[in-house]
Image (tube, rainbow, N blue to C red; front, side, top):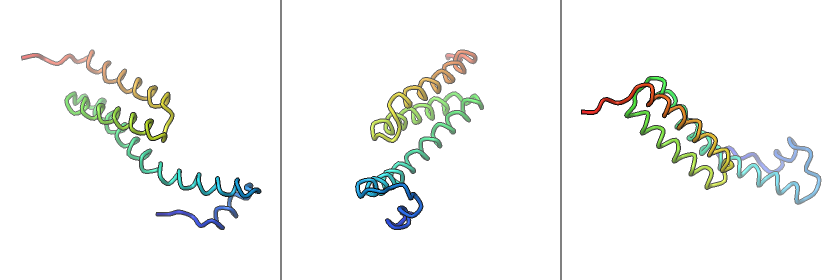
Length: 109
């Protein structure tokens, strides 16, 4: 864990004058470290879904899109991103998926 020490945080920030402000600097740092891997995984899932959509690999693209939507919901539920941010990103992702599906309809056996 790369949590900076209390003194180092206060020296870098320099703006926390009151004791409560200093504590909030520490809380913010803890939250940042807790949210960082969730944000990173979220970006990874969205990127992989978009790459599969560009490659027009429908089966895997639909699965990856589902995973990305699930991760967006999870991140919003945990408070890592705002629920409206998650909704907007899901909407854009689904719009791209539906556009690709409409352009290349699956052949039914």
